[in-house]
Amino acid sequence: EMKKLSEEQWEAICDNCGKCCMITLEDEETGYMYHTNVLCQYYDMDKKRCKVYEKRCILVPNCVKLTPENVDKLSFMPKTCAYRKLFDANYKEQPLKPLKGRAVSELDVKPEDLEDYIVDWDDL
Image (cartoon, rainbow, N blue to C red; front, side, top):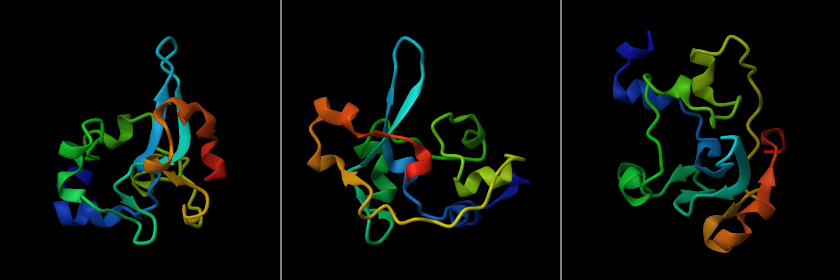
């Protein structure tokens, strides 16, 4: 059972794909989430890790800490997320494609241009 996992065991499930670190845009009228190929400035594409992992939720107020209690309720989580295999009967294991060369840092994108970076998750 997921709730019995230690924090270390929970963290070890993550495959560090970085997709949960991608910036999403929400349509305020419909609630629909649009995914971009723009990564949080703190995600290191070479190391496939957050540079400020322990402080991420402080430095990035909308960063969501994934927990056994919330991971199945987060609509923005990609279908390929390693945590999904714990609760999604339709989960399909897929080879990880590195984001390097297919994603950009938010430091390289003007906030008003984010809509130009909307992509389909299957392209990432």
